[in-house]
Image 1: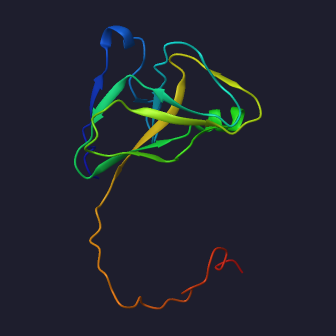
Image 2: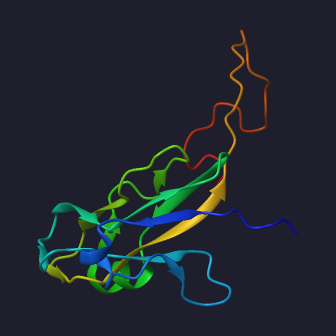
Image 3: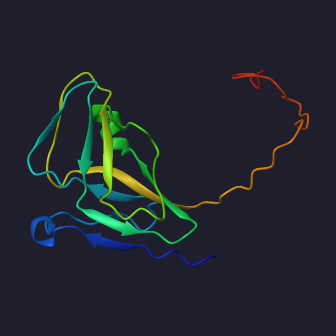
Length: 152
């Protein structure tokens, strides 16, 4: 078993955001940490609309890791709230405020409040690939078969 990477979290504007929980695992075996909204006032997300929601924190990830920002299943199923670029990626060299790009795919407006859990963050190890330009690719059973080609 490998050791867990250390992530440095910085609460932005601590006096204003001390009530906003920092990302945290809600159970002992959670894969993702819940992220809360650091909204100044309630936000009504109309059907079809997209909004960038502040979280009140920044972070430093170790080299070779990313934070994937994913929808929370409860918000998705109950209200149609998703992440417009799911999963969003926070790169290891980004140091600005983490903001969540939410979209309302539901049929009704949804009101988000300060402190609401709006997304989850999963930490993943990543690799930067070495690109090798070739004249031809190796052949496979699927080869040029398109979407749905493997279904029988």
